[in-house]
Length: 418
Image (cartoon, rainbow, N blue to C red; front, side):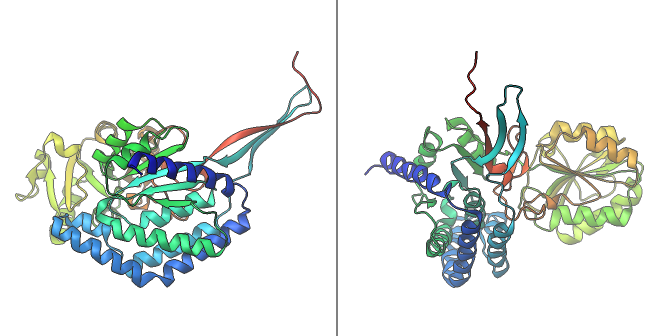
């Protein structure tokens, strides 16, 4: 069987599975999720052995430290994977809930009901934990899922998917509810993107080149985010210690992820007090700084930032720094160079905070908190399937509700239209 036929068969199986999933009660789905979590725990050593194979191959291939970090399944990350499955199990099932209800003068009763999307394809890179996160959220919302991870995590993804399917099967999960595309042939992505009638939604998670390629090839709907160019703006009335802690966390806690800060903006009136402390702290932590001319005056080691730096998603220990005149200048910079992902202001000025929140056109905006909180688990959604910077259907961290659509249910008593 050629690749095209294999993918079509996978799509057909997913469509059938989605119909079986729609029959499951919330209680049944939760029991299956718990069984998946148990199986991940039981197969932890097998999963880590598979991950070690991927890491070894990644080092030989010259993957960056950021990519290797994303790929690594530590004990803590596997424990978080298990916790994510259990967290999703206890979340309220959105499927079947009434969004609104009204009666028409002719007696028709109309209800807007939340329902599954159907079949969702997830195309992702590096992070093998996405396999469990995506599968759990799709399953809870009765969506069949087709997973296609990157070649750098091929063994890890296969081991996780196997554990999920074996665990779920023990409690009656419909066959083919979770499928993994095991081939590393890039044409498999093209096939997924063009499976009209089989796949209802595609979500790419990875670098800009992957997302761009999927968007250009797709004949089915795509939800995406191209970049995570996140900003922190330290306002004139910021608490210095708070600003230092937030900026350090946003950049350094895990620099290789999409919600890490890439550009730091500093109000000119606080720069003399704030920047020397911030520069010293970042230098101690090994962060390379690239600043505008005004920022360079604070330290001779700061490289001159180019226009490209303001658009850069480094995913590494590199930070662009700019001194701005006021809140509006910071807003203008973010709306010009940002990616509509996550942006923060540190300030004690309620007026400045309100202005920032109202005018920043991003999926998530923060006052006095790190952008690193843009995450489904941190938002109380359990796991997340991705972060959308689109504006239609879903925006920001995508949890259970974002993986549903709705239909109208109309009840009558013999009405006919005249």
